[in-house]
Length: 118
Image (tube, rainbow, N blue to C red; front, side):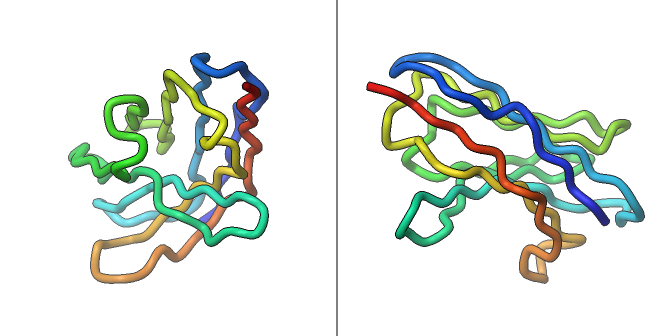
């Protein structure tokens, strides 16, 4: 499985961005995809995840109400719509995939940078 993330960039506080992650290769009939982020000198933190094809979602408390994760099952692609962005959202955002809930996140994409200026 390979993951290709795209869509990062720079916005001002209060702005919006959408990042995408497309999976290629063999996946299971039901699998999860998610987003994590990492700032310099900090741990990589969970942001959001979604199950495919069902669509069950989870969010970190820090992004609830501002970020929305969605998916396109046919394209094996997940999107993270980020609204009301804050400087503390600045990070390298990584997408990840796992073939079921009982295993750790197995596959990782390259990061896409999101920078929010104040």
